[in-house]
Length: 207
Image (cartoon, rainbow, N blue to C red; front, top):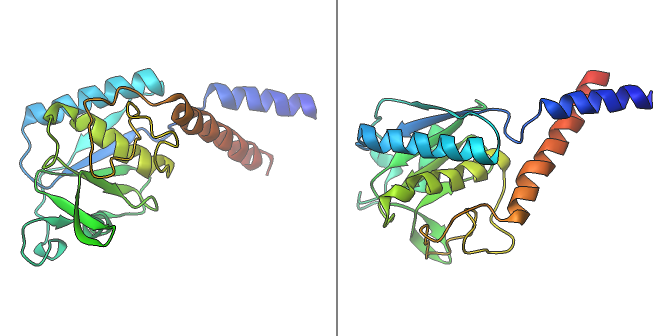
């Protein structure tokens, strides 16, 4: 019996990646150029292949018009929480709502705390905005950060490493400094997810 379980584990481990669903759906809410979207896809795909060993499939929806009810009373920026909830679905495909206009959330007693992105961790959708992004070439890092929140239900870097992609911005994001996932985040994202997937598959197989 032990030998059989070991064989099952080895077969499942070989075919298991930290990321099983490799599809991302980008939903533009503003006008993004073809170059901006292509660069986003190429950078994300390159990173996913190197770090997670998977080929990312990114689809881009036609531009959508967001309802004004998702904005603040002065109609100057979007409520990030409302945007995420508006687009949330039961699909396993991760959705990224892409905006150029400003977004905000409620934080530290501030009713309109400006942010770069948000994920609620309990669904398949996140939102990012380039409005506060100083270096637009870092868009892929911003999308990656919110993707990891959404897919892995993972919070922020426990070491608060300034070079880690999962560092909490705390209102002062510097994506130019972010170069990698720190060892602690890599361990949690890769191995804990893999072990969880393997255990679930064994249980499903035996039952």
